[in-house]
Amino acid sequence: MTEHTPGPSVGPDLFRQVMRRWATGVTVATIRDGEEVRGITLSSFTSVSLDPPLVLICVDKRAQCHDMAIRAGRFCIHILNEEQRLLSDRFAGRRPGEHSLFSDCSTRSTAWDAPIIDGCLAYLDCRIAEAVDGGDHTIFVGHVENGEAAGGGDPLLFFSGRYRQIAPPSPYDAGPPPPPPVDAFAWASL
Image (cartoon, rainbow, N blue to C red; front, side, top):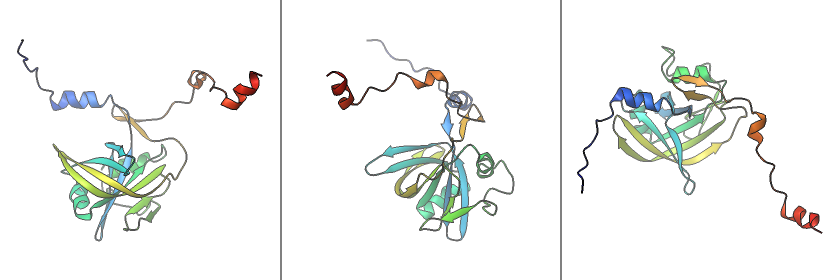
């Protein structure tokens, strides 16, 4: 039996380069902790379970929203549309001085008073069911308690350090026609 020799470890620069190759949607989580309300842009979001409905987000432990989420025990996650780049930039901290501002952002509130950002494709209001250590991030598993597939349009995407858009459909995207319904087949074979 041959002995396995571990290869070199993956450093942060290589890891970052590799992960930039993964296209992702863009979300904003909003959190209310007492009188303080903040938002944070996240690309680490996914569904976990249909029954019960669970999602997860990953939040940097250095982010102000991290400790707020722990104290509040809740978050509201928004799937942004391609028209919401400025909101993504704001809550990612790319627009200094605006990180926590909702003043020019049309919102309504969840039952727990966290902002629901109007115009997003969808939102999910979640109670934190579990917080798991994930290195320099915490993985928050949220039990979905409310939500809405709100708006139309295309999602805001992020790839290789830039925002991207879905390309218009090509004739090749159509694929073969769907099979005929079973009843139609029976009539056609008579």
